[in-house]
Image (cartoon, rainbow, N blue to C red; front, side, top):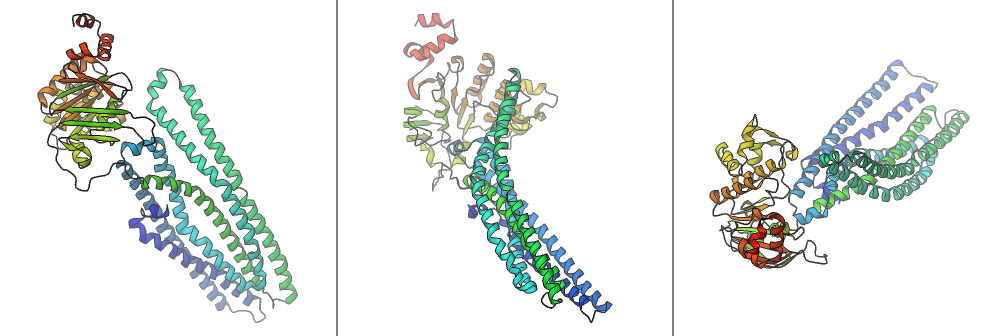
Length: 585
């Protein structure tokens, strides 16, 4: 996990290394200052006394040391913040890039809300831990070691009291960490659920309001939030044990040092232990115990960050399920498609196949309709063409070449898919359409909109093609969104165009205009139209009827009316006038 995370340090290696070095020098100077002050106090207490020049000299040394300590500390703070923020930036970028390379199979393993939590909360936790490791995790142990050494130099055997306390505090720390680690593992899973609830609510706010379900959703969110709060509270109750324990040990040690040290100063007349040495010993005692308290904070932060780091590493180490071939094909000859003995299931552990025994051959330029009842795996079938998933058995060929032999970018550049769930991005209409062709001119954009029957409503907007689209296309209707997505796909001029129920929100007349325009504009492109209504596919060259992941029938509209009971039932349920057509055979 650490090796994976540390790869994201990259250009911030220098400042990462500089931070502990600067902290090291800061600590050395801090540990020297009490010794200089102790010498000053002892000399002031001596019978010979001191001249004002000597006092000023000691004071000057202390001031210089304090300034140097401040300078090293400030520089360490600067390098530490630069390194930790840069590390977090790289970590987020690396995770984002990794998710962009995932296949659908990979994405199915992580929920969207979980990925959001990992990119935000988990990265923040790891950033704070990184900051602590490069500064506090260096400062605390070095401070502890140097302060112990100086305590023995200044206080002799009395310093053993600090050594005796350490095992007690370490035992408490270990017990606390072992208790809270399982709680943090649970709480991050609940964070994912909480984010899922927020995401679902924001996305479906129109449905929630239309069904007046705000109270129900608020209650559901409150329950998820309460679970997170409850687990964090349990963890905090355990964590708070360490602070009183530290304070108790600190007070016991200080009482002992003051009592026994004062007795030694008075009884020996300052010969066995001077006032300066006693004050230095107290200062080093505070340093030792404060460094232990800092270590306890670090362990707590690291305990939380360890789970976050593991979740981040899962994303970074996830191998894309689809691999590029060693010698990829870089050109698609035509839009012919061949399914040869295709079987598919989403997971190797799945009990049944989603698609079974698919043998299908589509000529380049042919228009194919696909129709079925709900849940027959129509969308899954077409996802195999652009290799969003790999077949479990058999092969899919495009242009006579197995899709697994293509360069993925080449293949997907030649297959345009207008998905069932249409998505527009924040930006102008023109910017969204140029996803199909980044170099498209305004005239080409207008032509694509005309073919997709989108020009009328676009040109009715005050800003026309410069109209700003809100996130997810929230400020356009479902039908408008579908037509803009079709225009975007047409601009790609693909070898294969797939419309996955992407005209469901437009009227039948507009649907017919779009199909006619596609025949005119891209006659050589293979067109696959998935639809719920038969009117969208009845003029296709062939229509495929799917049933439970298998091909039930293939033929023209007229042929299927006669030969396919499934097709006939769908047709009759949608078209009462069709009863006469069926009766006349």
